[in-house]
Image 1 (cartoon, helix red, strand yellow):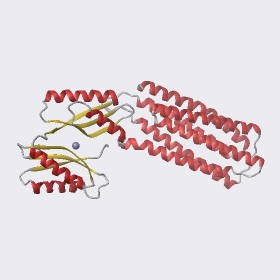
Image 2 (tube, rainbow, N blue to C red):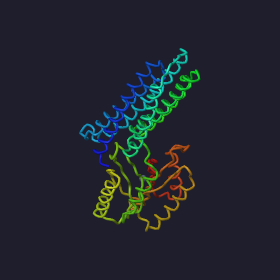
Image 3 (cartoon, rainbow, N blue to C red):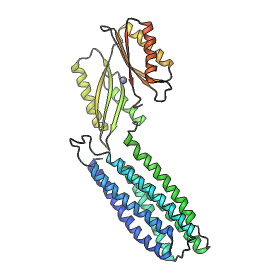
Image 4 (cartoon, rainbow, N blue to C red):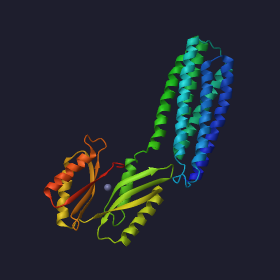
Length: 371
Ligand SMILES: [Zn+2]
């Protein structure tokens, strides 16, 4: 989907959320004051925070659409993750205030009085929140917007909170048992939980997520499908917001290829990656020369050594330079490895040096950025 259309839809969705919530706040505040129920008033406060979070989403979307410039050449796409974090904070706040309101109403031993109009309005409120929540969830998934999805989850919990309020109100009206406080605490804790989960989801891409394993394997397979590519390694993808990623990959090619041939291949892969995945890709080169018998022998020995060490995930980029009597290769070592990465690499180098004292060995340490 084009970014402009996506942003327009996010703003439109959020605007519907604001209108719906403002109407709910007015109706619930009115009923809350009339019946003297603090759980209905805290429900109204909760809806007010939803209207605020939709406003934050609109502001975030508008800001993230700003074009890249000299100061921020990667654009403003990541602002969306920040606004999703703010929405998560508002969910947390609403959860805490629901718990607080419910505890104070319990402590005060609050008595309430309802009539059928109150029940009707709370019921309409539940239906409206359910509809809003489902609408936000579906739109959020379609638009791949964390902020909109978070708002949808929030609205569904609000529907549950309002339903709890209604049930407690019915029980206190017909059976004279005041359950409102307990119901409010229980649901408030659930809201806090969803706030934490939403916070985790929105903060994670700011730190930098690992690219999805399946997508990484797909990208590598697609690149290997280009004639002349013997292997694809070291995929890195940095995400700067929806549809704006920058990355790099290393491809292995025969060392007999000319610059002209490599250049054509590189251009082809770059164009393909942008078209298919909207990734601006830099392509690095590994040369391979397995025709040399000594190279073959060393490589077999190296891979045997690597195979014995469970902490080494991958070895690639092997090259034997007979003129300089130099052998270089890359190692990817498990992030959870017990020993230091440098020590693991040194052990491999030392073992090879013992067998081939005349050669120099260089082990480059790559990181396990992608599957
Ligand atoms: Zn590498």
